[in-house]
Image 1 (cartoon, rainbow, N blue to C red):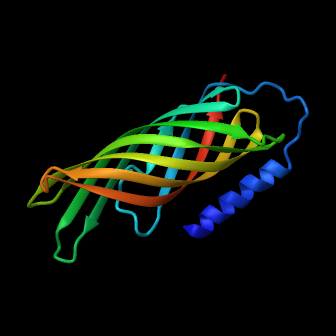
Image 2: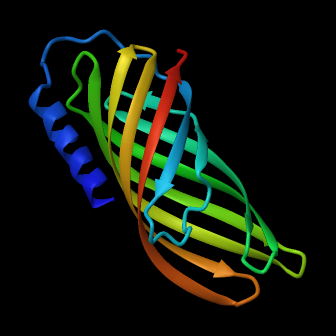
Length: 185
């Protein structure tokens, strides 16, 4: 994960070093996208959903990005027990886009999120609620003005609570993500 963050930092520096001051044609301001997260190996699921549907809204050099995330998983424990988990989340990101070239840009910002995960097995059902805040750095490649392919790294802090344990857990995790965004207007 540290290697991914170093690569993202180098890409941000490279994008900044190659920025042009030439006048640019206006970019579309509204779109939709899909972002998939890959948590670090020591992640404890503070920002549980792994796939997010986002609505990027460009406001000059800034981008606001409301998101809804969903995740479903099924695993088998060594005892033969099957566990199913369902997560839903909502997040809001705010980013400053800088160092834009003809086909790339870098961005920095933050994301606040809430999630709820339900786990069930033949013997029990539990729910976990989480709130998180993340610092985000990313890069985007624009094969056309209305499509972007991106990668980002997040340093996330969060707090979660399990309904059965009646306790709170403060956690930190590093997350990598890839995204595709389509701008329609």
